[in-house]
Length: 170
Image: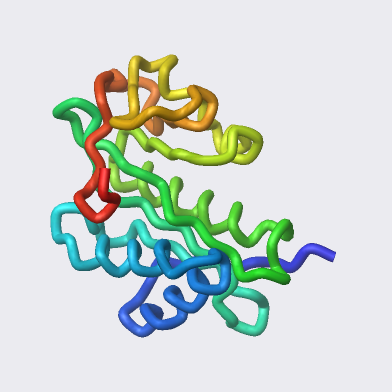
């Protein structure tokens, strides 16, 4: 049975629970620390683009974050970290959080999201290889793992090298 996930934006009282989800989902604290560093970066952190998926009982299970990056000189969003507590993975919590974050970004008038991730997972949200838009990462990676999603197809999609917030370390 697939639970019915409730999604909502992060609130001030969620910081510790978000850290817990990221610590549980990954083998090192790197992603949890990255979320905190991005939250502290006023140029990267955008209100309303940190989303949670909660189980029917209210437990925080999934998380998705969009932060400001740039493609060339144009503003864009970077998706990640995305995390789901072990034991709840492959049940739709991560997808629910990602879909909610992407919907919020569209509603805020954002144009483009980039993600470095699983080539089998992210296309379900509409992501395609970023190279198709002339978008390149600032590091070497196989083409299929660097993806982009145009949120506003009527607007031109920028091309160039992705510039991530400093917290990403690239």
